[in-house]
Amino acid sequence: MPAKFLKSVVNAADIPETNRPQIAMVGRSNVGKSSLINHLAGAKNLARTSSEPGLTQTINLYEFDGRYLLVDLPGYGFHRAKRAKSEGFGPMIADYLSNADRLKLVLLIVDARLGLTDRDHYVLRQLQEQEIPLVVIVNKVDKISNSDVTLALRRLKTEYPGVEFIPHSTVTGKGLGEIRDAIERTVRAHGVKP
View (cartoon, one colour):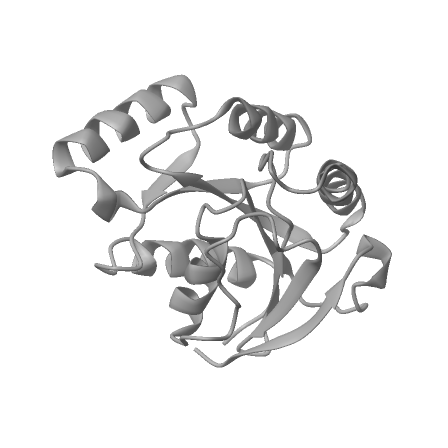
């Protein structure tokens, strides 16, 4: 899928005006958002990955297939990030989610090994309260056994009925098609054809 990096911004107001739908990615630091972006694009270096969590402190914009913008929001919850910078994560995400008229879907990325953290639960409930469509990507499922994946998904679906959970691995490719399908359904529903 043709994809390109557009720009990084520090304020939601600086996101370029467009009639294309926006798909946002949100999750704790070091959950694998950059790797997922590269996986979706079929590219190795479209999004910069880092072994040091908390480095992404901007809103990064990617254009996919000329049809939608993928909005990579800063990671949250990494305590070793410098205090002044880490305090900006919450407001930056909240500002975007409150003011993005073209936001049509949020991909909430969680680590399969950790499940939903307290902050993940908070974000998920806030999205539900704001009636923002979401899909939860249970990332890095290759790091745990299949039976643990099944058990984790069963618990999550019981706690959040009606929410779509997709197990994903950049290593095995598991879930990539389902994530692309969820995005495609959203893009098609908002009048943008392939």
